[in-house]
Length: 207
Image (cartoon, rainbow, N blue to C red; front, side, top):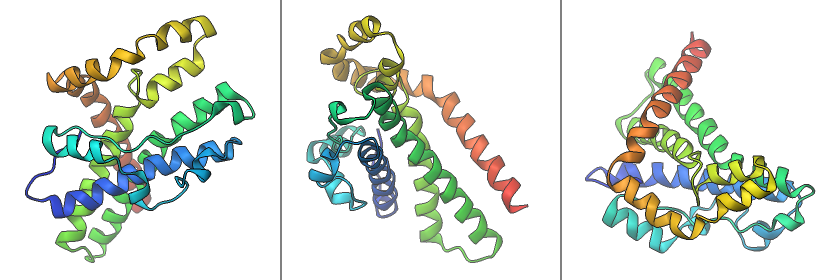
């Protein structure tokens, strides 16, 4: 989902922030709901190494589409399995949105105080972008993205079962949609809308 160009010295830390925050939020939400699995698997950490997937990184490098290591959860341990999966699935995108907002707020404060530097500006801007894109992308209701788990948590049991039957074929379909630019077209308005909301909130706070 994210390409690495000549400015990778700035892109790598920004990307690691977005991926780590996303996966950590999933782990934290699962533990909060009563599932110790992420803790036992060493995923309840902000150490990016624990969340990196070698194949996902290779795909990122070669095809500009990659992923982190999914957080293992056992819904059977949740106090309420359907609600638990809903909250765990929402946690990742929500954490990315909060991180993007905080990045934008920090950027605005540093800029207003004439304290910004080029390298920090680059990392903050890219971090905001990656967090916004990651949040919106993962909310697409298509397996294996978080949006599909949110949808199945809300659907009646039989509908959820029928929807999950496309899961074995979904990664190939999803990659094809990304390759041909369909996903980009679909999510662009939502990305722009989220940018607008964040910018307006930051302006309201700073002013």
